[in-house]
Amino acid sequence: MKIIEMVMPQMGESIMECTVLNWLKQPGETVEADDSILEVATDKVDTEVPAPHTGVLVEWLVKEGDVVPVGSPVARIEIQNGSTKTPPAQVPSPVAAVAEEVANEEQAAQQLEAKMQAASTGVIDPVPAQLPAEAAAGETNNGFYSPLVLSIAKEEGVSLEELAGIAGTGAENRVTKNDIINFIKQRSATKPAAPAKPAAKTAPAPQAKSLNGQDDIIEMNRMRKMIASRMVESLQVSAHVTSFVETDMTNIVLWRNNVKNDFKKQSGEAITFTPVLIEAVVKAIKDFPLINVSVEGDTIIVKKDINIGMAVALPDGNLIVPVIHHADQYNLVGLAKKVNDLAYRARENKLTADDLTGGTYTVSNIGSFGNIMGTPIIVQPQVAIMAFGTIEKKPAVIETPQGDLLGIRHKMFISHSYDHRVVDGALGGRFVKRVSDYLEQFDLNRPIL
Image (tube, helix red, strand yellow):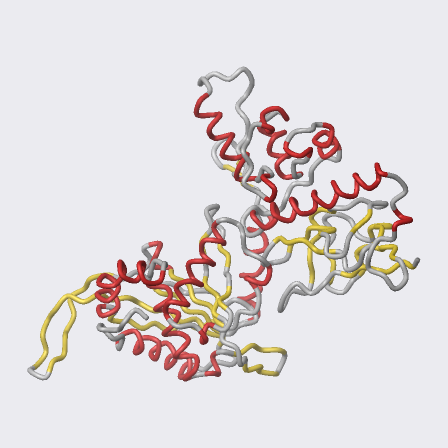
């Protein structure tokens, strides 16, 4: 037997530290290789860290709430020499074997719950130690409810008997966060307006406190704090400059209106403007590869991969940027599938850490909020970001061989913010103009596939 140190693994490009949110195993418990052992938060997503070996967790080396650099020790695990499996001698009785099986099931369910809430729930409140024991005492729902479900149940006054009646949609029919939230909504709708006890709190909403009877104070959640920190950091690191171009989107609007039904039938996907916009950006990056770079000290690193981040607004108002890796390798149908998939999983809190890392250039469709233009902030360590405004009908001069005419066209402003340390005005301006050119030259008769 020997004791090894488990270290904080690399969570993605540019992530140098993680915050420990919650330990999923206790000292003395058996852990299997790849079992989730702790939950951490990065500046991109909440995720779980697996055990590197099978063995027994000896001790934690960090506390919940600690900020731990990547590569630093977080725990000690006792393992058998030359083996990654728990030796039979370590299971002293049938009771211990059952306890280990329950623990393994608990980790699977906790991993599913954490992925469902990863992007937008902010910090996960630690669950009181007695709650898992209370759930284990009951024999309902396979004898287990995740700490998150138990925490919500406790706050909302849901009994174990009521939990047992909820149809779970998680792994092995376990009750998920969405299941219990839907149950609470339905219960509230069917109950009389005057409950016997005070109304339960709504979990995700930030709590406002009155300062002087006129102003309210709202405490930032963890995700909001991280967004604020990253935005200020980006402005301090990069010299932001923004260029604007107005683009004629008429051909694209008409094409989409003509093919959207057939596109859905042939590809199984809804076609929005976003994949078309991303396709134009990818083409322009191939023409101007010095936009697809990052800066390290006095060194410019030109990225060979074209990984496009797309900003997605979450239901709670926060913003997250999942990444389409190797975006240049997809056709328009492939881009539509990736855009729809990432947007759906972002809003359902099902993104993984890999979905949020490796971006080399970012786009934001601010037109979905009715904005005509904006000055987006660069996602570090990238050097540029593009925002697409709303598409509006406007009178415009149309040049024809017979002379100029006035007509109604669909117009859109494109905003391009770039790091003036390495991207000069000529490159930044020519790049956004090239994106505009590709959009204006879109083939109105383009086939779907």
